[in-house]
Image (cartoon, rainbow, N blue to C red):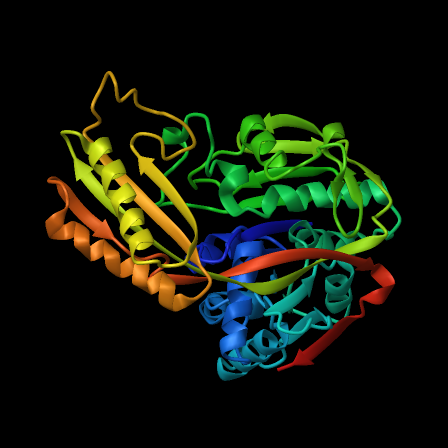
Length: 426
């Protein structure tokens, strides 16, 4: 069976669904969620109970549904976020309005009790609920927080009929899921090698996995698309966001990535074998989202000469004014891009004076009013600061202030979580 990645993060271009569906695959799987995005969605739902799912879901469905209806490729997505029921309703309505009668839209979700005063709560589900929806004939499956690799494991288990205790095969499916979950990273995106030979945004394709019944797989991509599938690009993604390669913990199996064998078998074709698995953990991981205060930031770009000195001086002065006005800032954070903004000194200021520096100041407060008051201080810099100011950036993700969310993990037994599956025919 063949499956393609259609998305690796919220905000990735929906247009990438076109090459994904065009790759002659059985399934296209879209991963929208990360802790940062689900926390943002929890804020959205707090503001409007009808929200909480990926805001680009409608745009993605408008592209995907014609392919699903006309060529029979199935779509799986966790774009339901923290409100998969509302996302499912949107998908049903979109299919109905587009006239795709007979399509079956599946919903997979779990009920978790939200603690008092919390913004939201989620549990990382495994693949079983999605498999049940596929077995019920779902052409599209909408989920909430199913673990990333489990989204891809589900159609593999369904197509090959694997047992839920066949740990080695389940581990092999998790390896495939982990390789594909981050969109084009396995096919040359963010590649640390000769990226200039792999990046061409005019002809981006999407990675594909060809998975055999024994769990062996070939990672590839469509001919003529940019990027590269090689031993190096695959091994980089294999170790991406992995704490312990010998025990990669998922809701369905504990996979041993250090047993995996990668073999380049042709141009843009890497065979993946050797995965080993151990029984799944006794518990599922969950997260509670709670309000964590507010943040603001500014970015000030200064030109030579003395660019770094100007940036440091202004940031120090802004903090001094805030202290003088007794603004209760809980935390400050400073960066000087062009000098030390990426974790350490990049320019020896004693020897060379960088041509330009962007000084970034961020702050955390308990309330929005204080965060806004600090932001207003930035206006002092424009005509009262040092010379050479090239621009002031004050927004973050399009908003002047950001509400912060704290994440608190918890664990609970598999049996304590009831997974609900519903498939509705349009």
